[in-house]
Structure formats: structure tokens, C-alpha cells
Amino acid sequence: NAGVTQTPKFQVLKTGQSMTLQCAQDMNHNSMYWYRQDPGMGLRLIYYSASEGTTDKGEVPNGYNVSRLNKREFSLRLESAAPSQTSVYFCASRAIRNTEAFFGQGTRLTVV
Amino acid sequence: AQRVTQPEKLLSVFKGAPVELKCNYSYSGSPELFWYVQYSRQRLQLLLRHISRESIKGFTADLNKGETSFHLKKPFAQEEDSAMYYCALRGNNRLAFGKGNQVVVIP
Image (cartoon, rainbow over all chains, first blue to last red; front, side):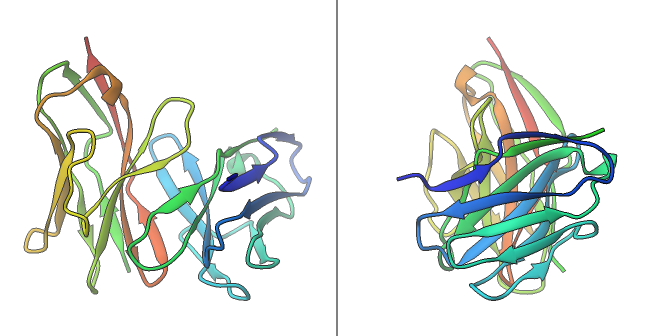
């Protein structure tokens, strides 16, 4: 049982480049989330998808876009990467009310 | 809007000493509170949820709606408790986290 899988695990981008972070879950969960983790800032919600076909902005959505491709997959896109987007990105999914969220192993992104 | 506040960033305790991590929240609806833990080189995982009212790895947390708090406690810290701890609140399909507490247990 793979759970939540993120690709890639590491990435270095130049300022202005674009890329897509992939996330897939095999637990048939309805809700999926993208967070960024920065020292002293904790986990901040970028975007989330309560169910297939819906996406909503979180706390820090600027500079990002998302796609809920199907129930399994929720991708995060950086159209024009900036150094301020250097961070560790986590994807998570959860099923129904009061159940835990399961996290991916994270993607460490560096923008130079 | 929902907000989770964890005041201390770093907490160092000696092995065998009590640990208390504070968490306060603001949310207009009925809150669902969680504690997540991230051990070194591992992914975040659920430690406790308020609905379960259980003790996990010796940790407990009680939801106090009057004080809007969900503090995490353990009477005797162990070295394996060294980790990053996050308080989280779910509301309106969002799952919001606090800034986290780095706990270091000194042997």
C-alpha cells in the first residue's frame, strides 16, 4: 500500500522556470492538500481540493496553480519559479470527517 | 477563519521530565483538533485526535473549548520523543497547522 506518493523528491530550478509537482494517493480519499514547510513558519496551506473537480485557495496560493486531475491525483504547478518558493512541499489526503490526513514524503525544491 | 497558535518554537527537556506543548485555536464552528508528529527523516503522521480521547505513546491532549486550547502533555519524556510536533485544526474542509514545536529530549 503506497499511500501518498510525491514526485520528484528533490528539484533545483532556475528563477523563471516552471515545473509541476505530482501527488497521487491510492486510498480513495476525497480531499487532497498541498502545503509548504518553511523554518519557523510551520506548514502553510497552498491549495486544497475537497473532492474531485473542486479546488480552493489556501493561505499562500500566490504563484501556484493546481489541478485535481482525478480522484487519485492532485498536482501543483509553479509557472515562473521564484527564490521565495524554495521550500519543502507536502501533499496530503484524507477521507471523511474526523479521520487523519496522510502525508507524502515531501519534495525539496530549491529555486536559484 | 481558522487559526492555530503554538507559542514555543523550541522546547528542550531532560529525559524523564514532563513535556507540555501548548496549542490555542480560533474557529467559529465546532473544531476538530489533531496533533501530528514528524520524526527525523520521516513523513508527518497523526499522533492524537481530540475525538478519540486516547493516550498514544504516553501523550494525551484535552480539548478545552472554554480556553480554546488543545495542549499536548506527557508526564515523562523519552529520547524517542525528540521530533517536530504540529497542532492542527480542521474546519470547512481546510486542515490548518500551527508553526510547530521542535522538541529535543536531553539524555
